[in-house]
Amino acid sequence: LLRGDALQEPALHAAGKIAAKTGARLLSDTFAPRLQRGAGRVPVERLPYFAEQVADFLAGTELIVLVGAQPPVSFFAYPDKPSWLTPEGCRLAVLSHAHEDGTGALEALADALGAKGSIAGRSVRKYLEPSASGPLTPESIMRSVARHLPEQAIVTEESGMAMAYYGLTESAAPHDFLTLSGGAIGSMMALSIGAGIACPDRKIVNLLGDGSAMYTVQSLWTQAREKINVVNVIYANRGYKILNNELKRVGASQDGARAASMFDLQDPSLDWVALATGMGVEAVRTVSAADFDAAFASA
Image 1 (cartoon, rainbow, N blue to C red):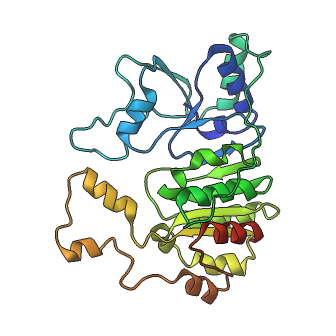
Image 2 (image 1 turned 120 degrees about the horizontal axis):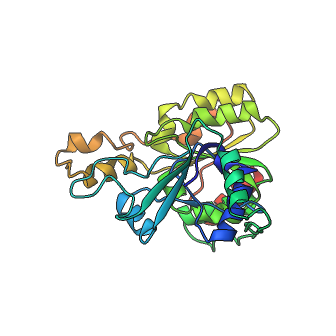
């Protein structure tokens, strides 16, 4: 289970050799601040979000080796569901702590296992066909992103809709993937600015829900002012869907209209084209897979 510098080259190369030698799976946290992935890089599986999904994902695991990571736990305490997600009987071993050199630790382990001569598996570039004509869906969006993502792009992601089809971009051009550092939402608009200022020669692709985007909507103005090379893909969910889901999972109900309205973004509805245009950012609204593919390809 990798985190921190262990999710970047050359640590991934060493981890890939270990996996090839031993048959181990390579995993990342659900939300890892930075991961280098895409074609030509060692693939890493991402832990699912919900506790029961993690339980199925890790079923049968005998040993989890932590490299800069903590043992997996659920983000919230759900009634009648475990928060500690390490399978019963599974051993935990710490190869390196978060403040230590994960790269050096993996390279030393590869050497100790006699894996330095092993060949690490690599993701293969695939050009996904765009979705057939029809309404825009989370899958069609990610197929277009994977198809048109430029070399060495930086993807910033804060959307459950995007997360569901994360695997589609494994075969995309090599890129850096930045996401939350924990379970809270609302930082990706600002994070895209930081990425763009740090790497002005690289395209930033910012994937986020409308609720998340509203936390720092003024970032649009800063993107325009600083001339950030960024494409924002905002999923118009018309509400805080993840918060609604979490309320249901902890047994909280929204019986009253006022309570339900606290997570609703339709009274009034947000006009993202108007918001972006008013802050100097070119914007377009798409409702079909074909229109989105064309818009993203030209952005």
